Image 1 (cartoon, rainbow, N blue to C red):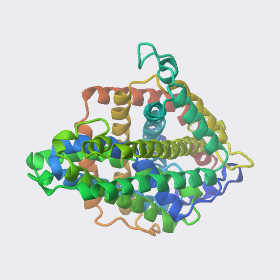
Image 2 (cartoon, helix red, strand yellow):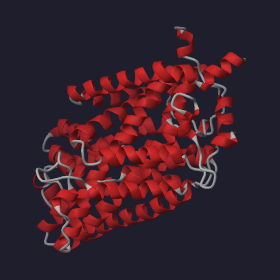
Image 3 (cartoon, rainbow, N blue to C red):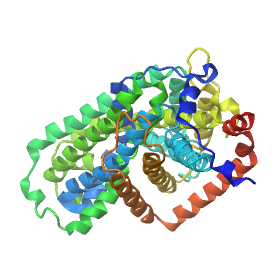
Length: 469
């Protein structure tokens, strides 16, 4: 085996050429506002309705600082994504960045990791959506039988999770009929969930009692850091914006604004919610699966709980839309390079979407929705996301030194210090995950190595081009 072939790299010229090939050409339809909405759609999901309470129990009222620290850690990685997405306006995100910076083998490793991040999260999130949906229906007197709302692995008398399968089918159809439909639907849902959160802040701020903020740091900085480790998970998703680069009208200008803008807006919303939430009730009462709704009940505003549940449902729906979109583009990009079967990079003639990739992900996620333990999948997805952040930050450093003359419409500040800080912070968070999660990650990568050496390495488009030259 020629080791040099493992590290063959794409050129920036080839990156541009790939996006212009007619058989793989995607429709450029996204504006900067669509990108910001995509980022917010992926970031603000059920986390704001759940994680805020868990982090507050760890940090007390200083959970506000926890969210700020988590946002800073994410910002270290976000500026790297912004630089690379503006340099390489191609779908595939970190997969393609690694292909240019470090070569095909590293690109495959991170591509396989991204499949883990995007595809595996969909069934788990869909099951969460199903729970909110059935509870919301139950609140108005409509009860779905347990055997149709849970799988046999989730409940003793469960059989199949119909709501989870139904929402995935709906989102698959939405993705199939065009990126403009995806963006428009997501924009509407993002607007609704922002309004719901602002509504909570507005109606609850009048019930704030400053005494609830004292002591502000009951567990010291150790508690703040513990809260930040939990709050970090509420920020995962901004990287999904980078998968849309190839379908953006002006990616060089708009990708950095989309990535950093969505992270900034989400941070402000998280801080506002955490300030009000810890101000209306004691942080000791927030250790609850639905802390916002619980806080409203404590202050006698039961009438608003239904709206909060609806907001959570909308929030999770937009997460599903964006993550499904990102998953299809990752598989499309890897397939276009020959490392996965070429059928998955086939583009629909009318809608200009990767229709076969969409169908594949729909089938896989619908079959698995409701059959996987959510806590295992969440940690599995988190470690995959953190690894993607590490390799993206590393790619920025490598390209700054190996290809310093490449045009950069946006430059990450403080290179190499900021990317190194991103790498260190992500590695520290990865080390906090359970050893079982690491074992699952290793097993996943072993499977990926079999796929690469058994199929991808021999069918690489880049390898064939190099042989012809």
